Each structure stands twice: as structure tokens, then as C-alpha cells.
Image 1 (spheres, rainbow, N blue to C red):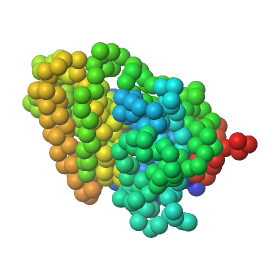
Image 2 (cartoon, rainbow, N blue to C red):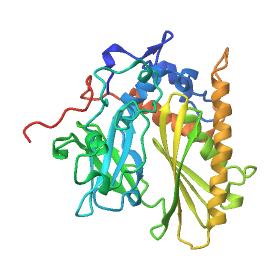
Image 3 (cartoon, helix red, strand yellow):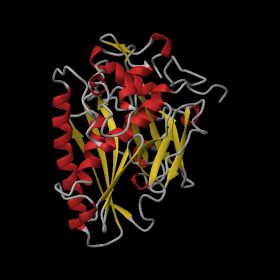
Length: 347
């Protein structure tokens, strides 16, 4: 929410808020065109997504089992905003904005304004790449660097965020005006209740997050790639950033986290309810590798000059585009033209 809508979202003469820009994307599948090419390569469109999606919708940030013990902390950057989810002593979860949103910088450095998350020692910053889970023991006792970055001296003064646990997943909403009332995704039954998370990994892909999401679903539904109904594999994309691929013996949840307009981090969680399902898990992970290669190729095609709009060939992308265009067209009663990082007053 760092860009006020009055300033517009225009890149190369293209106004991304114009409804007619997406008219041809709204027609039926098979006729509808893909999103404008700039939607996959523009820093301005990335800022539009920050305003219209990441700071408005419920966003999946991981799974509750990743932070099992008291004080364990899961960092996550939602759009341009750095937040964390922490396990409480009573067993519940709490979400907050990080203490050091911009690390130790008085102003945002040039390298942090490219639209790509940077590798920086201040992992609590909204412009840096996230680090993994921080164990509660590291954050307790004396003020450690990690505690200073994420919690500060008094975590109760940090700006809170709305948080929900849906099945095994942790969802957050950082909109202080409507977070508690925004529609929740239907994912509670997506993973079987008796399934446990047996593995987790991160996978970087050099492609826009939307291309990666479509590639994951399309590959998992493709018989030629080892997926599809004939192989007892299904896939679903839960807007905006959770893809779930399931087989008879395992399930794979993929959290899509953009790290640049042409980069995405796949946060993988493998679930199964069987003790000897390693082959099934490996088969699902192999689908991810094929999908990653497809997404990279699609990104390379996007940046090449084109003289006309292309028909959207992916049904999953077409369905996703309808949700995204709805978000772009939505009007909100409150817009935030300043970073959401102020500490709460009166505490």
C-alpha cells in the first residue's frame, strides 16, 4: 500500500487501472487473450499487485507445523511488507509487522528499488529475501540480532495483523481496514486431516509468480508430464498464492512468494498419511521441476517483442486472471499511502 491510487499505475504509456485493457481477457476460455505482457515484466504492475492483492487478500504464508514450539517465528514478506507469525506460550499464533521494516537504512537504497528482493543481513526488511524459521530459543533471553530485527524490546507495541489457521495452513491479512472481514479461501479440507508434513523445501524459479502458478497446475494435470486423472493426480490453485497437487498417497502444497517481477520462491510442503510413501512424494516433486522449466521458458517468451495479443492457452491461468482482474477493478473505502509499520500508540 505504498503507492496511492491517485498517482496511477502507468508503465510505458499503459494504464494498468483501465478496465478496457482487460476486456479481451474476460471472454470465455479459448477466445480470451492472456494478460498484457507487462503484467509479467513490469515493476509498476508488481506495485499494483501489492496494492490490490497482497495488501487486501488473505495470503498463505506457510504451515503451522513449521513453528511447533513456544516463541518459534516464521518470517514472511507480503508484497512490500515484512511480517512474522509467532507461536505463543499457550499454543496459539500471533502475527505482527516486523520491528525493523527497513533494516538500518534511513532511506531505501537504489538496489532495493529494483522490484527484486535483495540478499541482506537485515532479513526483517520488506525489500530483502526472507530467512527461514527462527527458533524461539534464539529470540528469548538477551536481545539477539534476530530479536532486535523482528520483535524489538516490546513486541506488544508492534502493529498486529489478522491471522487464521485453515487446516494445516497459516493465512494472514495485513489490511487494517478490512482484514478481519475479507473473504477467506476454502482450503480447510484440501489436505486430509490425518496427513502430516513430512518434508519442506524452497525452490527459486526465474519466472513471474503467475506464470509459475499456471505451470504448476497445468503440469500436474498433464498426462504427458506424469500427472492428470489417469495418473490419479489433481491440482488446484487457491487464489492468490497456494497451489495444491495431490496423488492417492501424498499431497504437495506450494506457497508462491514473488521475489521479483521475474522471480518467485516456491515454498514446498509435502504431506502424507502413510509411512512408506517416499516414491509418491518424489513423483510430486518431479512435477515441480518440470513445471519450473516450463515457467522459465514462458518468462523468456514474455520478454520478447510481440505485435499482437496472444490467446490464453492455459485454463488455470485464465481462471486465475478472472480473480486478478476482479481485484484490480475493486474499489476500497480506505487507501494507505504510507508504509504500514507504525507501532501502536497508547501501549
